[in-house]
Each structure stands twice: as C-alpha cells, then as structure tokens.
Image: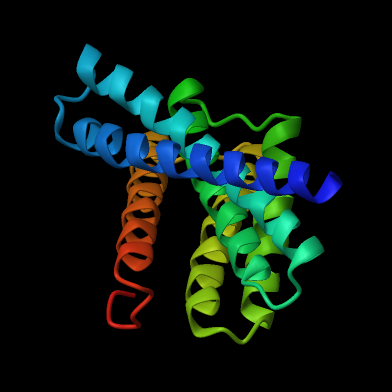
Amino acid sequence: PNQHIMEYLYQAALFVHVVCGGIALVAGLLALFARKWEQTHRVSGRLFYYSVLGVAFTAIGIAGWKSWFDLASNATFLLHIGLFTFYQAQAGYRSVRDKSLKPYAFDYFLGILGLLNGSMMLLTMNLVLMVFGGIQLSLALQDVYGWWMRARGHKLPPMAWLRRHLGNMIGTYIAVFTAFLVVNGNGHWLIW
C-alpha cells in the first residue's frame, strides 16, 4: 500500500508540474507582450510567477522522490534546475514588489541558496548544469554586490529594480520554454 500511495503522490506532483508549466508558458508570453504597468501585464505576470513557483516546487519534490526511489534517475539535474528557476522567479518578483531592493532576511537566504546551487551545478561537470550554474552564480553575485553597495551607503544605478526584474523574469521564461522544448523534443541536444 505504501508504494501505491507514493506512486499516486508522484503522479499528482507530475500532473501539477505539467499544468503549472503550461500556465507559465501562456501567462509568461502574455506578460512579455502586454503593455507594461497595465492590468494585463500585472495579472499575467502574477499568474506566471505563481505557476513558476508551482513548477519549481514540484520539480524539487519530484527530484526528492526520484532520488529516494530511483537511483538511476535525473533527480540531481531536476533539483538544480528547480532551485535555479525558483531563484530567478523569486528575485524577479521581489524586484517589482520593493523597488528599493532593500534586502530582507529571505533575500539573504535566497542569495546563499543561489550561490550554493550555482556552485554545486558547476561541480556536476554536466555541460548544461555548468552553463546554468554559471548564470546562477552571476545572478547571485550581482545581488550580493548590490546589497554590499547599499550597506556601504552607495546608491544603486537608476532603475536597478527594473533591470533585475526584466533579467530574472525573462530568464525564468527562457527556462520554462526550454524545458517545454526539451521534454517534448525527446531531450535532443540540439534543443539546448
């Protein structure tokens, strides 16, 4: 009975992952092409953000399930990509919620998570994870540098929040779109 429950939970998480991914594809596209500062952009952007959180959290959960029950799986890959996607979505959303970019405790946690995940991705020696790991480290280091500059009393560049928002949200959409192509293209290396 335990195995059946675990299989059911896995299938449910996979279903939520796929549904959230589909919503993220559509909502992200709407947010990209909608006029900024208008209702359509805000609503579709929020929907994109929350659906990406669903994708990231289910990816992390599925990775845990796979590593526990299927040692020959791609659990490590899925875990790193899930954490990477969570970092980008959260940083992009946070930039719009507080344009001052004043860091709070969760931001520091997110920065540490980004630095650790990016470093671990580089150590996998998997080419795809190494590329994403370099991007992850770059983003996390930019955030840490911005916090350090603020702590020293320096002003951030004008519209720094907008650059951070755009970079992270567009990067998140690229990750979602790439995942969609790779899964539906049977993982062929040319898609990457």
